Length: 434
Ligand code: SF4
Ligand code: SF4
Image (spheres, rainbow, N blue to C red):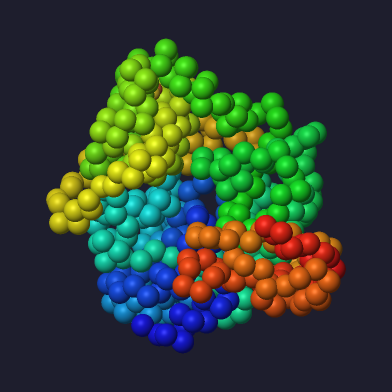
């Protein structure tokens, strides 16, 4: 373990760039046998990881090697979709010792950590566990690149796709708005656009295009309000519950498709749906919903009745977690995967089912140094508590200056100025005007 690297990564504010924003310096303190680069990128229409590996492969691999050394791993595995032969060829030519490439299927959810670990090592993470339970650390492509760049994280890479003139993968200062990102993609091609932030499968619905891009904004899918996905994303819990209780015929398809069930985990979403009949959503011992990875496959792909088993599982999961109930992780238990290989959902089929096939499925990189005139930097854009502001209104800052940091000993990440300018607001966010 390199204490110096861990301290630097902490000071640079590096977090997991694709998910909850877990601080990377904590991950680097682990001991593991295998490090896996997650280049699976299975959200339809998103291309950021592929584009970064293509343009900045050397940096990505250097960052991966630094992680491998830090956790003392014997090997590093680069997970890339097998269909990206050009990226595989260019990465292969740069591959350091102790690294190998694993070709992944073009299926969903290949980027789920549990599926990625299984596909690259054959190991099954136990229910409620993390990759470390089977000796693995998983690192995001952009995160590896940020480690290699060796400077404060002030830019974010994301694909802007869907109803835009030129779908593109952009590099943009953190704190710029969704609207500015959409303009870099040539602007929306629909009146009154909305976005799915992070992807069409696991994204969050937003109508507010003034929302700032953060360290974890993985992509923007721009849609018109009449797109069927908007109706799917805007159902209330009450509607989900009522429709589910009356419409579920217990056909089992949601369970047949569930990637965690297929890994041998005890989750069965059709049981979560059945519990709605008895008003038992949230009963701790009903259905093992806590093992749901929220991939949304059961809702978006499996259910022939267009019901919401994923949302029922997610609601149950949060109630179970709120109740304090925890699962004892048994890393030794033998859990064979079942039928996973012949029940993978191909991305082209998913794109068709989601009503996205009319959109361009490409996102070439545009890293043109665009700088907004204003940056809005939320003090919480990572796992853990919000960072505490280190600046006050009227201060002048330059790109890379520390503007907020977590309290001593608390989980969180340092936040830096992403543009040069003057601080005009300090609240639950810091605003910089150029
Ligand atoms: S969202 Fe559905 S398919 Fe995905 S893990 Fe949860 S229950 Fe399984
Ligand atoms: S797939 Fe749909 S109808 Fe079938 S059991 Fe699951 S929720 Fe019910």
